[in-house]
Length: 139
Image (cartoon, rainbow, N blue to C red; front, side):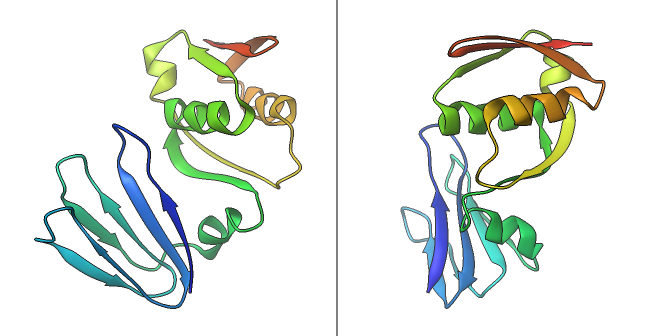
């Protein structure tokens, strides 16, 4: 069985199954799902479980190879993932930009600078980098 668990305080938890079989339940065990390969379960902060089937394999496999893949996610979520991965602080100065939807894919060897330059190439944003502090601004 190969699966990934993404669980952080005050965030939706997710379990994604690559191969095998996994059962997901909420804390009270009032809701349960058995996942099959290429499926995902999300557990909300209130304990509600959402079951997604037929995920794109690229999304499911990216974590196995150390890659970075975001499909139609708000920039604020992508920034949070980058903060965790690269141990930096990212500030997005414009709320509408933070809610802007992006799709991004990089292999495990991509640097933070490469990822930021690629996002800048969308002509939606610019950034300033100062050691562990990054400011993302509307373009």
